[in-house]
Length: 250
Image (cartoon, rainbow, N blue to C red; front, side, top):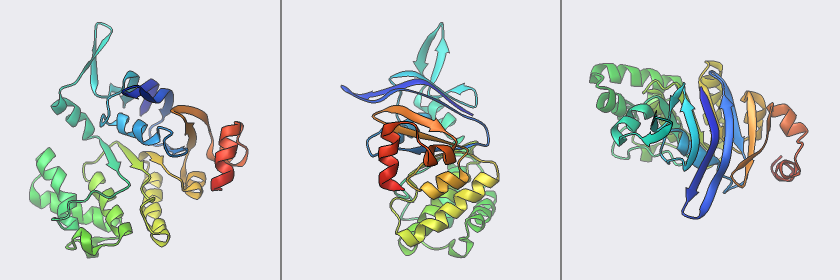
């Protein structure tokens, strides 16, 4: 579903990603671990072309992300074409990013109506179904300000699912939550994984990574330091940098 080949990203002279290569199979959950500033979130943003890669190639479901190839050269897609690609990739951010002037229901309905041209009646029915799926249909008419952080994040997940994505990206979805609210969001993510959704999750939730992920990648300094089966990497890391990081978070 996702293939990264020597993906490099620079901001000016600062090279944030230094040749990242990895693969995620269809239906697989990959967890990305690493300290702040290691390039995890930047890599996630490159996957749906919120950031342009400086070098290398990224494909999702066999299609180049953000570019077309002609005569061996890559040409960036028009923003409208790139946005079309992005429809198939759901993203959930640290800070829920809900529209504050819309109810939970309206937040979930918005993109299918505006982007896909779905009728309001069909979008409303689907939004109720998705809110029920994340345990929040009884909060459909609440505005974000009247929802807890965990509830807002679950609405954000429902909103991403409303576009029927083939891939879901989660950028530290629980890091802005109070500890007692983390579980309700992770439970929804577990159910998505059980349903076969392909997911890439940047997280510090080691229990989730151990239980739910099919593979785990540890990044530091813009490179993949270590990767493998979660239980093996967490229990017996091979690289000194991985050992030092895990000794502080486990």
